[in-house]
Length: 68
Image: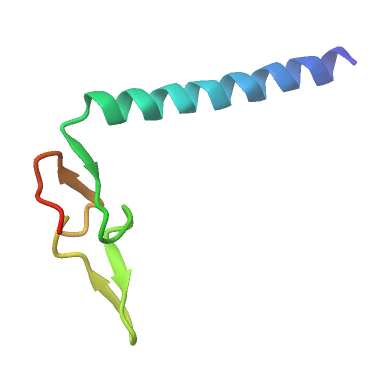
């Protein structure tokens, strides 16, 4: 029974760490997720994948990037 409690605490700790890391990264970062490709760096065309021109394939754009 103690093993289950320890495993639950570890899982909750990892989840909490990832949430805090994500939130702090979005607040203090100089870039944000690209809205055109949803952070993937590419978008699906009717025939194949196309590299995103807005983020140049990185999935991130500067915070002052004008959204269309």
